[in-house]
Length: 401
Ligand code: SF4
Ligand code: SF4
Picture: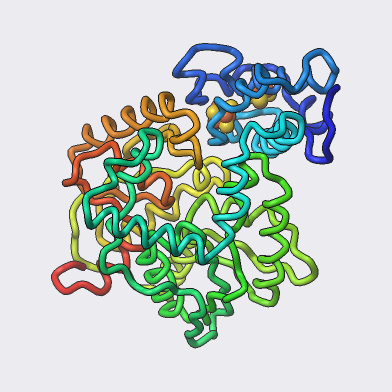
């Protein structure tokens, strides 16, 4: 039958692969299994076979695509410049269209719940109660890892949605609060607002915004992702910059098509590192000791942002210790912890061992999913925060900095 939607991988995208195999050693699922069908080249080959009508979009094809993390580690090493992430999203949209019903629960979660502030709030309250009563261990096994990795919600700060402030001489920022970030990682958004305002920006967190749509797009829910994008391009029209505090969100914002006024979309680490670089934010003079850094795939591989989080931690007085020079995926990858728990666990355990071998207990990670994965695989003594939180703490806490 071939492809049936407008989202499918194009012939140009698929033909860009010259089958060189340079992507195989950097692909986490190939490294786990050694199977060609678990490699970027193998998956592109399977997509080409569908395009040529040789194989159908069936459960067997879907399982090859499902096993992919979407980490995009294959993109920076690819001499053919294959837009693998785009081809993967298009293929997942095809699977969703051609095998209906196989993921109706995900459709509700990523297409409805994440876009509803009321439902996210309800989930936050329920989880807060479960954490207080020590009930998170009763969650079904495939959800337990994720719930174990969440921050403790007791006494959490207010949502930043609706905030407006700052001088504005550096320009205007519309801050994407993020669906999960706004409910469970509010201190990251608060640090972002404070730092960007210190750097001279006017910062607004528009009421009308919604989830960026990254999880929906990665899961093949193209219509929901488009719906979220349309609402956000309306909510963020008119700002100089749109800043996201989660690497997965900033990577997705970079692919938005804006109607008319096109703001510059930035990950918060880029905005803060630029402000430190040009002297709008200070460097602390004290030495705060070592800190280990983990690179989220959607920062390192999808946006090629590597130097900025390190520059922020250095400006906070920390000596940055590398966890993994190759930046291999930690296995979080959106819904992967729930959809492919065994592979996710193996990658999470590997990453935790790498962290332990640094001998450092402070960890910086710029993505909530990675933070949760690390926390769920590490002992309680490890302290994991976003790089801008470590920096903000160094600037504002007496005795630090
Ligand atoms: S590195 Fe690029 S061109 Fe080479 S096999 Fe992998 S996807 Fe194809
Ligand atoms: S996105 Fe990641 S898991 Fe998927 S093929 Fe590329 S390197 Fe492998």
